[in-house]
Structures are given as structure tokens and as C-alpha cells.
Image (cartoon, rainbow, N blue to C red; front, side):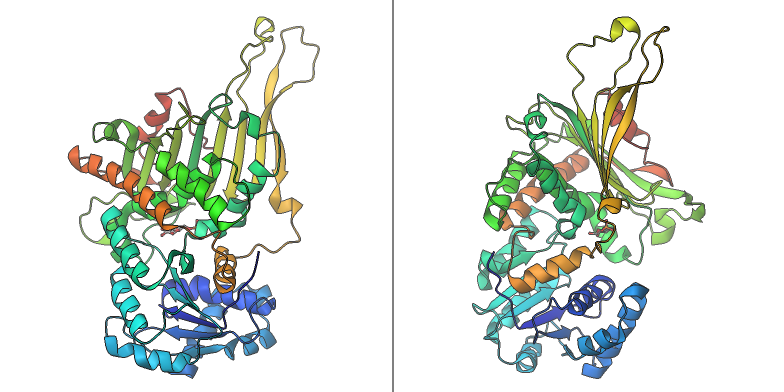
Length: 487
Ligand code: BG6
């Protein structure tokens, strides 16, 4: 892959939470490992008066708080600060942009702009940037979620950005794609020959994807209450996992081959009718309870006002194509759940005939577990015979065949997902960024579910913090004879 690094990075939302927790520590991580272009400057921008030194203090504090101790290196911190400067800007004020352009200076060696701001500012940002010449052919732009709240608003955002930037210079971020374990799905599926022949409706009975979090609202009431679990987690991160699991083998590891195959999956997702929604979705909102031994408040108490926003959602969906005909995909995510866990469980079909049945041996269908976080492992559950003389019958047991990625790659540092994505942005590789057609198909599927909730007046059911969500989510799979993978 041809690398085409830019010489400048402009970060909007430079004093925000994401910048402090993720973007600045990631940029520092790349800098400390010598991965940033030698002369790359990083210009932070946000509202409020601050000079370069003031912003360097903000950066220092953020790194102090969010960098692991073993990554702090005084000399690297010093040279990192030399890259940093700041220019105040109010993106809704057209007068903000000329001083910004002046501060950035010559962009002939390339500029990457990172918009980590509310999407309501995208339009004025793009217009302002265009007027002062910051959208030319050497400029690429990265967009942070949320990229809209439904299909119509997402089209509007995409149209706005497309007025100034062609698709090959737009980098839509889904940070799950930057995660090592998520990219590992590609290695597992397409770097090995033995899964592919059974990776279809003939070999697989059902697929479960769980992204369970123990955190609650955090300090994000304004955003989260307007979004809810479906739009916050399923539309983007979980559907990206679905696509990587379900897509056809891409011919090459590049932006077109991989994104073409993902987009085909999104277009094949079954879009529910309003009548199908109550049977195939469950929503919940956390009440008070205990998580990890700690008593926590319910969502409404945290929020301080009534709300029908869902903090949990479970969905049964399907992919209408040949490979996946009749295979249910069960998806669920929630805040304040029993444990923090992201996992994909693939349940294979049972053997067509059990030769052990007459001798008392019970079989479980094979399962492949891909644990994405907090641990990183791949586990294949296979049947084995328990040692013994079998005079009372044959005892078979499910045993795990374990591949611990944590242990196998113990020496390799796990980078923050944003390190990978920022470096790819700086170097111009779009493979792990989301293309317009993907986003719009994701929203079309999501909108149909939301329309079904509205049409059926569905409200989230309360669940105790520290549980696995409302009990109705158990019924969603049990009805089909399937049990959620909870241990
Ligand atoms: C974000 C969501 O996109 O992903 C958050 O807005 C969520 O609500 C977060 O907590 C989860 O990311 P991760 O990397 O911790 O799994």
C-alpha cells in the first residue's frame, strides 16, 4: 500500500473528552514510537481563548491523566509538545476560519482535519473551511460519530461533506475497526482454510454478538439520552462486527475490496416491517442495582428527568442472501450490565447423526467464541470423551480448544484503536474507515426498527443494574431453542 503522509493535522474539538482520553494519548503513542511524519504539526482548535502554551498545558494534563505510567517518557513528551499549537475557532462563526488558515499556513504537504464535534456544526465547518482554501486536493477529513441520528440526517451530513470533499478524502470513524481483535476476525476467517467450508447456513446454526458494558451514563447525558443503545452501539460498532463475520471473502486487503463486501452485507440485512419489530427486538433501561459490588443509581436518577431512552437492546436479525439463509443473528448491547464483555459466539449445527446416542453419550453442537474484550481469545468448544471404561455409558464433555491472543502475543503492545486509525488517516489508508454507502444502509436498517418501536408504542423495560438486561431478552433466543452465551 502506497503511503501518502500529510504534513499537518488539525484537530477540532481539541479540548473535548475524546481528544483528552483517546486522540492526544494516541498521537503521543505514535510520536513516541517514531511513527509520525518527522515534521507533522498538530493544531488543536476549539472555542475559547487560549494560546499555544495554554493548550500545551491542556495536552500535558491529559497525557498525565490518561497515559499508562510505562508509556510516559520525558524526552518524548518534550518533543511531542513541539508539534503542538492552538488556534481558537467557533465553527458556527464564519470569521473564525481565516485566522485558522493563517495559523496552519502552507498545506501543499497535505493536511488531515479531524472533526470531533457535534454534527450540527459540520455544515458551517465545511463551508468555512472551503472559503479559506482548507478543502483542496491535499486535504482529507475525518468525521467522528454520531454521523446523524437517522437516514435522512445522515444523508444530509454526507451531502454537506461531499460538497467539499470527494469520498476518497473522507475518513468516517468507527473506532471498533481500529481494534486489534476486530481486525483479527479477518485473519481468522480468511487466513485459515478450515472455517470457510462450514461458514454458512449449512454449517452454522446461529450467531450471537454481545457488547456488554458496566458503565452507565458517564458525563454524556446530553448526547446519550438523545441517542440510546441502538443508535449509539448497534448501528455502527455491532453492525460492523456483523459485516466482518458475514461478508464474502474479499479478493484483496484494500479499501475497495473490503468495503465492497461489507456494504453488500449491509444491503442484505433484513429491514424489519413494523409488525416484525415487537417479536424481534427487546429494549431495556437500567434501574438501580449493583455492578461489581458497587451500588449504582438507575438511569432516570442519573439523568434527573423522565426518559424513555433505551440503555439496552437485543435484536434478532437476519441476512437475506444465499450464505446466511435461515441463520439468526442475535445482537445485544447494554449499559450497566453484569460484566464488561464484547464477544461473538458462533454456534455450529449439530452432527447429522450421533453414533453415541445408543451408549448414552450426549453431544453439544460446536461453538466458536471470539472474545474481543476485555480479554482477547478465540475458543473452540469441541466434544471429547471423558477418560473411563464406559461401562455405564459413554461420557462426552464439551472442552475448550484455546487460543489466547493475550498470551500468544504477550510481548506486543496493544495500541489504542485510535492510534491505528489516526496513523491510517495521516498516511491516507481508508481500509478501516466507513464508506458512505455502508453508513446509509446501516441507518436504513436502524430506522425501520425505530419506526416499529414508535408504531407499536414500545417502551424500554426496566432491568436491574448488574444484570444481563430485561428477562424478555432471554425469551428472544429461548423461543428458538437458543441460549445466550453468558458464561
Ligand atoms: C462509543 C459509545 O462509541 O463506544 C459509548 O458512544 C461506548 O457509549 C463506547 O461506551 C464503547 O467503546 P469500547 O471501545 O469501550 O468498547
